[in-house]
Image 1 (tube, rainbow, N blue to C red):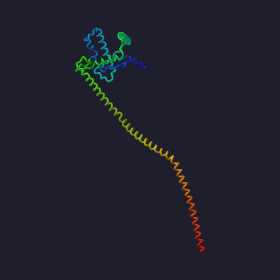
Image 2 (image 1 turned 90 degrees about the horizontal axis):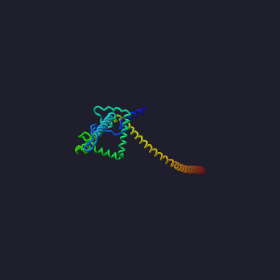
Image 3 (image 1 turned 180 degrees about the horizontal axis):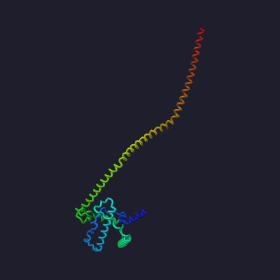
Length: 274
C-alpha cells in the first residue's frame, strides 16, 4: 500500500523529476521567456500562431521549472529569494492522457518527416549548442558568444572561474565546520583508539618475542634430545672404566696389606728367635 501511494505520488510529478533528468540550478525566467535571438535577422518566416504557441510553451516550462525548484530543489542550488512559487495544481488524468497522446502523435509525425538522429549526432549537436552559449555578466543572461564583443566574451570564462572559486571556498568552509564537529564528536574515540593501538602494538611485539624464545627453546630441546643419549652412553663408559680402575686399586691395596702383614710377622719372628 505504501509503495502504491509512493508510485501514485511520483506519477503526479513532472517527467524531469520522475526520470531524474538534469535541471538548472537557477531558473532564468528572462532568458527562457525571451524570443529566439536573431530569428527575424535569419529570415525565418514563422507564423504568428507558431510564435504565440512557442511563447506559451516557454511560459509553461518556466512555471514547471520554478515549481519543481521550490518543491524539490536541485542539490547545490542557491536558496530561492522572495516568495516561493506554490506547487502546480494537478491536472485531471484524462487531460494528461490526451496531452500525452497529442505529444506521441506529433513525435511520430516528426520522426516520419525526418529520420531520427543517432546518439552520437545528438550528443555532438548538444555539445556544439552548449559551446555557443555562455553567461555574459554584462548582460546578466546567457547569450551566444558570437553576438557579444570580445571584451564581454572574455568575461564569461572569468565569471565561470570566479563562480567555481566561490563554490570551492563555500565547500571548504563547510568541510572545515564538519571536521570540527567530527573532532568534537569523535575526540574521545580517537584517543581511545590511539591508546588501544599502542597497546596492541606492544602485545604484538611481546608475542613476537615470545615466539622467538619458544623457537630457541624448541631448537635446544631438539639438540638435547639428540645429544642426551650420546652423553649418557659416554658417561656409562666412563663409569665402567672408573669402576674397573677402582676394583684394580682395591685389589692392589688388599695385596699390599697382606704383604705388610706378612713382613711384620717375619720381623717379629726373627726378633723372638734372636
